[in-house]
Image 1 (cartoon, helix red, strand yellow):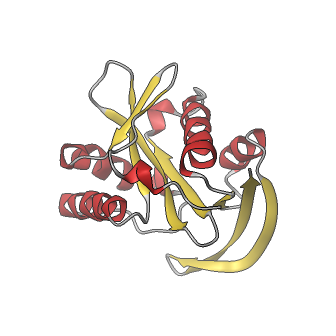
Image 2: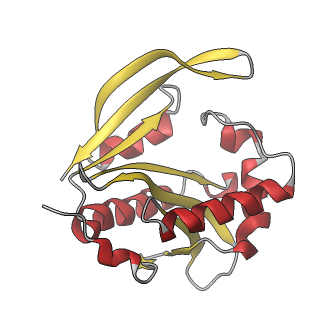
Length: 183
């Protein structure tokens, strides 16, 4: 078994009923900054909020370079026919030797609760297993993030681990759970 590296020849655009998932571009940096500087978006994600717009530009460049180096695939999510991104999602830490990757993402708060994340993540998981050739996909999530856990469980992810005081953020330790789906 081998990873299908041909998916890195041309960026894979995914189309769902309501969404277009395409490559993250520099023009998306403003919307990424708005999401990543929002305390509600970051409440369960162990990372500092962005303070400067340049940080979003740097993130876009790192994301694009990771795809070029076959280390990750980061999608910008847009409602079909629209130009503003509503979130990002992707497969990171691609491990070709073990056919594994990590799933991660974020969505603008005004789109929470509309089952859009389920639609996007479903497409990405399907792509990861059936196009990229992954054997397993892992998601690290705060045990307090009930929405993300519900979504992962709907998609067949199973809880594999729970780490106590794993993440130090803003001077406070928090737990982390690991959920995995196997093809």
